Figure 1 (cartoon, one colour):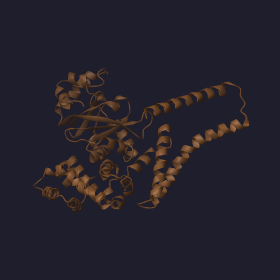
Figure 2 (tube, helix red, strand yellow):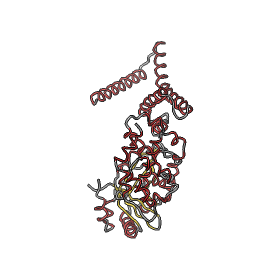
Figure 3 (cartoon, each protein chain N blue to C red):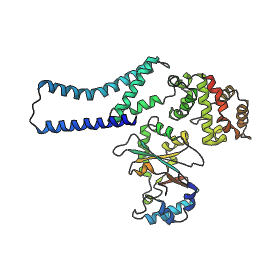
Figure 4 (cartoon, helix red, strand yellow):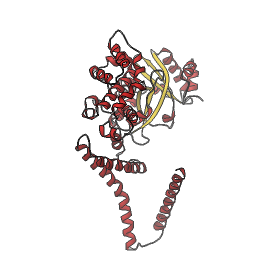
Length: 237
Length: 170
């Protein structure tokens, strides 16, 4: 792998050097291009400019179409979009984002939708994906169509991970008092998700935590318990 | 990993602060160190924590850096998620307007120490606080060290927070 990268790098430098020499020769000499060579140069220059822009335009068009089809575009359509996205990554890297599409592509990848989740096979991976991309969702995500479009187990995962995060950030009392925060969900919705994990311990801890006089510090520990998550993950298989 | 507690314990005099800053040779640094020490010792709340600089979109020339800081005894933010959010979800106009107010609100008399101030009252910092539990502000990228510094000293006085970042001593 390292060898290949080194070879690519060397080839790149050679091509650049050849190009520089060609330019120096053409600029200094009094050459007349033959007609065919002139056309070839013009076509190459045209392609070099056009191809990246065409890839960019194609990506935007496919993206538009996939969004218009609603929550679940066909797998083929998704594949086309992902392949175009990886081509764009190369274009963006080598042109220092001249097309200005890096943000768009990255944001599409970080979107928390059923389609994006479906592309990951391992449910544990899905959990870490949700954890990773959740802060990048819009502020009204828990009330959005995207959230409603997720499978129920994934919705539960979002609710529980959000509870875990707000407890971590604000403490149990702060998390419960915070009704409008970024990670806050309706208490009834949390109870549903907690119940569906099947962990009586977690349910008890959650119900205790809700009573203002008693804050169960055990809650955060349980929200980190792999056994609790195993049930959430199992529902996703 | 810098020893935050050790650094905090060493900050007992203006000279000690002068030894920590990345710019001890700036004109007037001695006077600044005295004021910085006063601020540190009279702060209502303070901590020595972690600093990270992230390159951010929306800038011209050298570009913008978002200075992120937090108290590691209180929270452990997910840095990869922060980086991803800066490059996708964080609105560019929020970054740009924060850079303006950060620059306008900076403390010129404290440039080598607590130069940045009033972060917690600004929307960008609140955006980060809400999602990741960290404070933040945007500035032009002045120096490579803006991206490699690793210690944040935060002092809150009269409801205004002051930030000083530097590279931990070896």
